[in-house]
Amino acid sequence: MGRKPHRALVPGGGLEPPHLAAADFESAASTDSAIPAGKEADYAGCRCGPARPPAVQCAVFSRFSASFYAVLTLSDFDYTLPDELIAQAPLPERSASRLLVLGERAPTDAHIRDLPQWLNPGDLLVFNDTRVMHARLYGRKDSGGQVEVLVERLTGEREALAQVRASKTPRPGSRLTLEDAFEVEVLGREGEFFMLRSLSDAPLLDLLERHGRLPLPPYIDRAAVEADENRYQTVFARETGSVAAPTAGLHFDEALLAAVEARGVRTARVTLHVGAGTFQPVRVENLAEHHMHSERFQLSADTAQAIADTRAAGGRVIAIGTTSLRCLESAAAACGDGPLTACSGDTRLFITPGYAFRVIDGLLTNFHLPKSTLLMLVSALAGRRRMFDAYAHAIAQRYRFFSYGDAMFIPARMKDDDEV
Image (cartoon, rainbow, N blue to C red):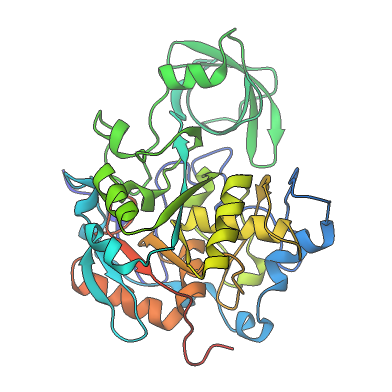
C-alpha cells in the first residue's frame, strides 16, 4: 500500500500531520501556540533564584537583531524533500546512522559512531533524559461516538491536559471510556486543550503506561510496533512526560557513550518534556506573529555546575538535540543576568536567526521539517544559507530525515557572511 499523497513536501506547502491536525480535532495544540512576538514569553512557575519577570519575559525577543529578524518570513525556511527520504523505521543499530558535520566550508559525510573524533577532551555533552509516555488512547463518548485522545501533560495524579479528536466537542461533565479500560471526565477547556480527570483510583500515569499507545510522529506511516517501545526511547530516558522522543539522543547506544567517555568528554542531563505541538506547522508568514507552544523543563544544580566547570576549563557545551538546547537557553533566560543555576518551569522560547546564544556552543540534531521552528533554530546557530546548503547536500546524498533519520553535527556557532 503506497503512502498517502499529503506526506510529500512541496514548495510553500510544508508537511501537515494527519493526526491531531487542527481541521480534525476539537483541540489542536500548535507547535506554535501562544505568545505574540514582542510580548511576554511565558515562563509560568519558573524557579531560578530571585524572580526577574521583565528579564525572563522579554528574553525571547531581546536577543534578536531586529533588522535581521524583520526580513525573515516563513517562506525563507521552506524546502522540498522527496517523500522516500522520510525514515519510517530505525536502522538495526542506533549508532549506524549517518552524520553530516558542518564546517565553515563544505560539510563532511561521516557516521554517528564517528562522533567522538569531532569532540575534544573537556567538552560537555548535555542530554535530555525525558521519556515518552503512552499518550495516545482510543475510546468512545457516552453517546457512543468514537474519540482519540492525546495526553499533552499530566497536571496531577489523576488529571491531564489533552487533545481530543471527536465528531462533536465533548461537553464539560461528559465521560469518555478509553481503551475499554477506564473512564475520564471532561472538566472543561484550557486554551486549545481539554482538561480530563480519571475516575479510576489508580494514578493516571500508570493507566497510560498500561493501556495507552506509543505516539509515533505523524509523518511515520504506520502504527507503533513492539520494536518502537525500545527504539523510540533513548537509552538514558528516565523522566516520563513527553509525547515525542528527543530524537538526537536516539543515536546513542552504550558503545557510543563509552567511546565518548574514553575521549575525555563529560556528559550531563536536563529534562524538557516534548509536547505534541512540536509537530504542528507554523501558520503565519510573518514570524513576528508566530505563537510558540509551551513545554516544561528542568535544569539541575549538578548540570549547571558541570556547565560552569566546562566553561572555566575552556571546553565546549554541546547540546544533544534541540530540546536540550531549548532547555539550556530557557534556563539562561530565566536566570536573567545572573549565573546559570538550577531552574524549572515552562518555556515558550522561540529562536530564529539573530538570536544570541548564551549557553551552548555546538549541537547534534536530526534533520527538521520545512517551515518548522526547529529549522529556524538550527539556522540561528549555523546560519540560514549554510544550513540550507547542508540540507541540499543531505538530500542529494540520500540522507534519511526526521525522527528515525540521520543526524547533523554543528560543532560551533557560525554565521552567514551577510548576517548582522
